[in-house]
Amino acid sequence: MESNGKSGSTPFLTNSSKRRLRIGILDLVHKGPTRALWARLMHANLASIMPQALAVWCEEAGHDVTFAVYTGLEDVETMLPDDVDLVFIGAFTQAAQLSYALSNLYRKRGAVTVLGGPHARCYPEDAARYFDYVLGFTDKAILEQVLAEAAQHRPMGVMLAAKKQPTVLPTLEQRWKYVAPTLRKAISPIKMVPMLGSLGCPYTCSFCIDSEIEYQPFEFAQVGEDLRFLVKTMPGVWVGWHDPNFGVRFDEMLNAIEEAVPKGKLSFAAESSLSLLSEPRLKRLRDAGFVAMLPGIESWFSLGNKSKTGNRQGLEKVEQVSDHINMIMSYIPYVQANFVLGLDVDAGDEPFELTKQFLRRTPGVFPGYSLMSAFGEAAPLNLELQRDGRVIPFPFHFLNNNEAMNVKPKNYEWVDFYSRIIDLTKFSFSPATMARRVRANAGSFAWWANIVRGISSEGSGRLHYHSLIRKMLHTDASMRDFFEGATDTIPKFYTDRVKQELGSLWQFLPEGSLDHDPTAYLKKTERLVAATKARSIETMAAPVVAVQR
Image (cartoon, rainbow, N blue to C red; front, side, top):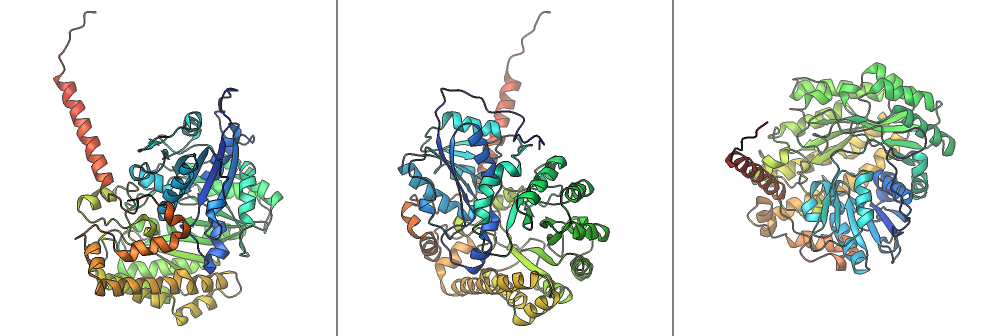
């Protein structure tokens, strides 16, 4: 990042003959209307950075911008003006159906529509059926191409992507006019400002969207300037670091934070790996104002490089990780340990029982459970899963790591797998376990955050939902056949749920948009391989021409 207040090294071209566009930018934090307690408290804190960056760049290019963040509590149909020329929507895959409906709505009003964000990266060809432009990695050059043309592309949109993520983003001061209104929506005592210190990840977890993205730190001088601006503008707020793995360049990052932020002026939350969280570093993090850490454990039988457990597995890994987490919690009051359920290395009761043992040994930790999911083109493992016919075409609406596992488990039958998830969830959020969690976090904000999460959609809500899925697997043949891959017809249960959760936007959902090809990535890869082979054969078959020199 630059430290001179400019948001990029390459300015936009100026051309007085260019049309001044009315641009709407919509960041979809949630996938439909909700009144959940957790949504009211925290969804406003989950805004993304790239939509804010696009808003800055569009204004720099001379266009009129309306920016909005949808948390599920607003009337999304009225958040942008009716007469916008160009609409950018940022969405995770769980909000794909909502984004498709909104694109259809704005197209009917005459707008050109653009999709960015994780869903655009993971399912570009599906998204191109419903948007005029689908953007992968987006820098100023890609954005300028869209702004210069801003044309309809139908029935298939144009897919554009830079070769890598941008090396420079707008400063926090430039983004502030978009950050501040979103913060005012948060009714929680926690108000969180999104920031980035790096992009990409040094680890290579085969199921992760960042597994093949080169680690790229931003300029630490700019990080310091952003923090100084925040201390001056809104002291006392939280900074949520959106880095896939915070603290890889630990000393340089902490130097920047310590130099910019007087003690007690800001609080910080970050996702990091246990391998980076040694005790001397934890002391430094505590003194710098870090109050929440989200390390990834993922599995008791693999990924030892992230948890600094090497080849240790099973109970031996549980004991080491538990000791490490308890040590972290002596410095950092709130710790969420993240797990992926249903990995191919897992079998039988042991992974679930080991997690219970971990929670007994580590009473203060909050467990974050994700179901193994394959998000289109997100990770190299997905090619293997698609090749083996293990990816199920669940509607995108349910692909949020919890409401659907779109990969047939390797070592479990579906009913048995859900029975184990239900048992683990019951244990994790039982009154006794939650009471231990509250006692372990007494005296900090963490106790009420743990209670709210446990009694809302993340605890009791998921228990109810998983129990319903297991019951239907017992009683509904259409559910069993769909889960087993015997049919790709979406069960009525899921169709009805999308209709209910989209509310009035259901009428704008394009026909057929609940369906998608779960092997699109594999087919695309095979086409590219075939084309490369064909070009190679043509080259070898070309006549050799002697050149006289």
